Figure 1 (cartoon, rainbow, N blue to C red):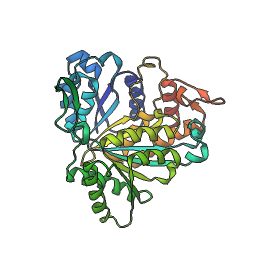
Figure 2: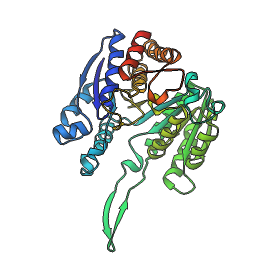
Figure 3: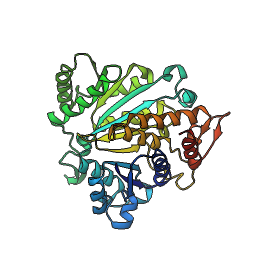
Figure 4: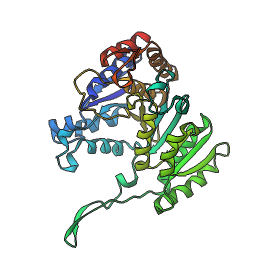
Length: 350
């Protein structure tokens, strides 16, 4: 099993190091090699997704990513910004399906800003299309028209792109509670009218799965009002970006949420749902659990090793039950620890 490790920027190297320690502790036949992506790659090569990283990522079976970005790169030309490296590797590897589970661990019920009775037992999977939509559509840019600057982007989806991401969602629902909610904005966007039409067609292929539809603004409201009504949510790139971050906060901290970005053959890039958190970078206080849980997703989806995935997830549950907490999930009566100490606790639980 060849893994390309991309620590990235900010807290990325700290949290990735703990996930690497956990993977090594499983005593599996794994080869890991590091490369540069994001701001650190810009500083070293001038390119947020340099050629050496491209070569390594293409031959690896899976990619483990920390995080990219930071304010020090915000003034660079757009093509050199760290986020372009992230978009670039997703496109290069054909990672079209982003899976973000939002699970509330019982021990963290009080960490959520919502009432415990609203979020207790929460278990949602958000499936987001990752290589199309307004993030990649052409034409795009900023130009001068009639003497003033005009910015423009293109929201675009082909029928085949919509169909393949919907099938990922329906297949996932078949292994869960057999409910899919497709999110669009068909009342004003023709692009998402096509999305809904295709969703209805694909739904007929899965008669066991209950299909529902929500406009994105209503979906955002329902996630806060009654999140446990959802099982699998599926949507496009931009809506999925926003809704998955909203769902992450239902669980108490974005520092707890892993994610997987998969191609058609389950080769994947695995990363925590949070960003690079430059305000706490280098302090050893970041929560590594989302990255460790992302490694568990890698074991499950790319390497089809369910037993190892469950071992890692079980270890995370155990350390939470033992009361270990990083600052983002700390509450009185629990034991506050740093990044390395949390990694040590997971290793001990393994």
